[in-house]
Length: 295
Image 1 (cartoon, rainbow, N blue to C red):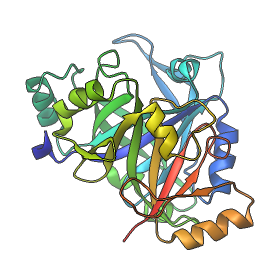
Image 2: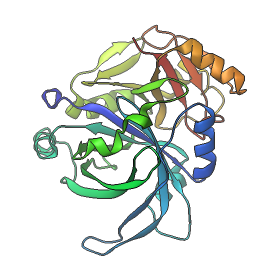
Image 3: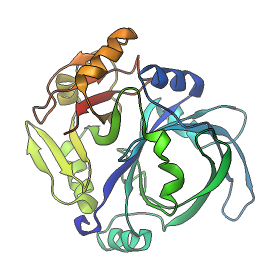
């Protein structure tokens, strides 16, 4: 699988209150896309109908962070299943250059997965959202029962220029990449064995396993180790997708921004001994974030 060059593409935070999440992330200095409402078929081959969920995204030079939440609980949405389980980080997507090649390699590796599915949605385009463009993807969804750590997706972007618009990449907090995902596992050995089928071999650092993607990293550790490592997880529940890493231009400027806005944060070395700033679920709308400085 390493020959496919899988990269960390995006992570999705599933929440009930999308307005609250949007306000929380804007307070932390993220520039978010305008709201995009979801639609889909309720059964294979059925008509596409409006759903009661939508999203906002923080687009980075590399990757992005998606806020996906309920807007109308009376309407259908696959977000309901996520937030019923827990509010927090759920979706972990990896980018590939060819969904057909990725699917073939996944099947050969014994990874249970659905065939690539073509998806499209309207996206606001232009500095003032004055236009609409059709964004196109091909998604491969890994089986969630076999891989319960996350809603894993392998995605081929057919129209990346529509999502990664230059004006959307400028963030007040200096964010420029989605750098890592942290998984808290009840059985680290089994999780590592399962993920290695499509990520290759993992390295070990201080009791944690780390998968190095073409761009980005996956960290896997026990819940106890996650609590010990992360200052924001010691008193609350740790979800399977325990935290997301964000690269910023300057941790000093980030700290100054947080202090000016009374955002609670913690400083502590990350697992690779680099400086990091952690923000907990109370500030990040049920998610946990760790910020590190990019080179």
